[in-house]
Length: 467
Image (cartoon, rainbow, N blue to C red; front, side, top):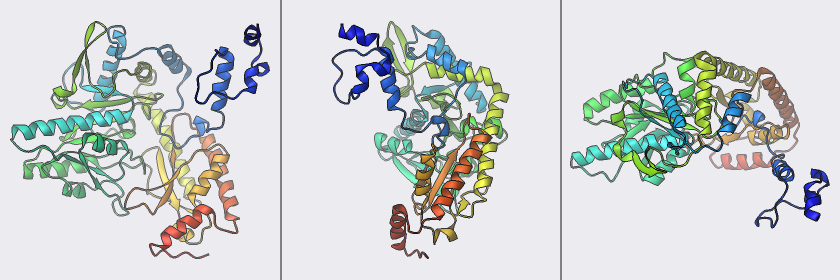
């Protein structure tokens, strides 16, 4: 009777309100759905509103029909191709559309590519393919294949560290610097040798928002390969830029129009505008995808050919991507990416008006950018950007502060990522809160804890501060 009474009691009149949520042991008895929902929902209250999260690249808004479509497919496992053959076909259509968006020369009806759970898996697949192609050539030449390496800028995303560690491929980092704020092609080639499986330029560097010059790299690499006899290819990590450049800068050559670009990866759940997790990798032609990566599995009564590190994977995100292609079209994607870029440029211009700040780059090429404290102001400041991050968090904004990669690790920056759903009004609200936070920090009589730690570290390097 007690349980029946609990089932008919309103949420906040139930006994559950007086009990803590489970931490390490599953509850002995079931909980009414309404109360279980409320308990889990309450766990998420003390965190950033996704729409105010300018730290994440991940899509935080999709329209109601996209959300409805994905919710209705939330129970679909993509790998069950026998049971869900139309999802497999839609996946192939998504690959075709993306390959053509990147100017594939492949003539097959179904282009060569694979779906991933985020661009990290897509990067892994592109790297593995380059490694296996290189290994096959070395074996055919009767040469050792135990010391592979790849070349990338120090502005790379952590997935490439994982690739290096897990597949034991040496990662040779080309440092970004004040002189070379993106990958310098000629420095990259100095890191290459006969064991280099590929060079990885980035379109939309996570740390800075900038683009490596793939065309310049391709031209330099073409001469290098001709001179050395090597066949070092390019894999483009276009996690962000892959869904921006085709719409906002279609004449820029960074894709399959370039000779040595053999594979490209991107994130469908970033500027592909789909909820997480979704990634894509496309190869220039079927011959660049090693047969060793194509696994045939007898699963649920059918032979399934699968390229991927993961087996089971959600089908809903694939439907969400296809919905976006249909719903938005080229013009719709272009308008959204244009608006995001324009709002990023607006914020960039307003940040430049703060006497305390200095924008890292001279232009905004993607809907994200970074800034740091002005060098002169930094000599006498009593706070750091970490303190500003904490102040803004109190107003609900998540704007990250962090140090740049190796060789620039003495620079602390903040970054704003503008995504679909972030409007000019929201930008003005954020800037107003930032002005108020800076004004408050300016009133400090003593340096903050983070400032003391920062100065101690920099003084050891010989930097002088004046207070």
